[in-house]
Length: 131
Image 1 (cartoon, helix red, strand yellow):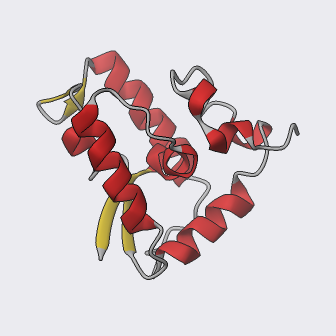
Image 2 (cartoon, one colour; image 1 turned 90 degrees about the horizontal axis):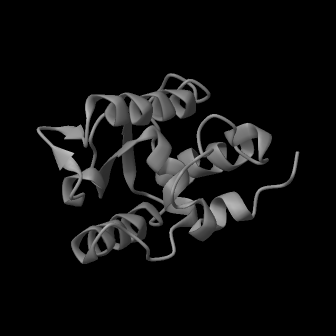
């Protein structure tokens, strides 16, 4: 299996609990999350619309809502991606092991998860150590 995932979604998937913009988005996010949990799934990382975005009602003309909102999302993606090695990951397990070693505290996601509308529901953020 293969997935294309944008940087900040790598964190979102780990805290996903079934909330979303609408039922189509939740269904797609659930399916993508199940695929990424298969340790042998190949994942390409990016800073543009991905396999999750394709079901988002806010995606218009390959952009999220507005120029400003899209720019903020791309910045979040890049903050995640700049902390990962510049290489292709052979498996989902390899990528998510590295992510969990890199993003392990509240301070490690500062500037990425701050202000996210899903923070209250996100188990990933809630389970981070207060460092």
